Length: 47
Image (tube, rainbow, N blue to C red; front, side, top):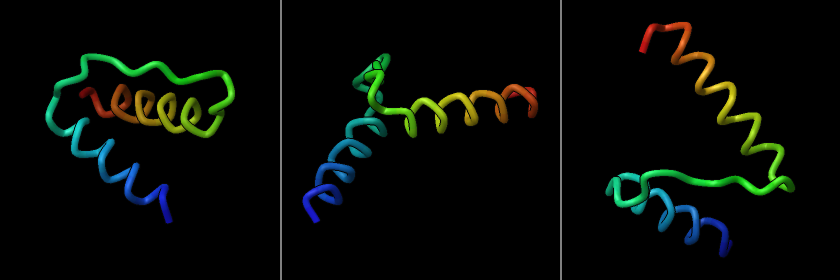
């Protein structure tokens, strides 16, 4: 359950726009996949 609290805290920080960038570690393939898919879809939408 601790992941939920951490995730919520991270989302609050992300929404505040206090961070200009995020670096994903090489051991986070799911995050790399999500991010690349998100960028591809935004690109296809012309966003």
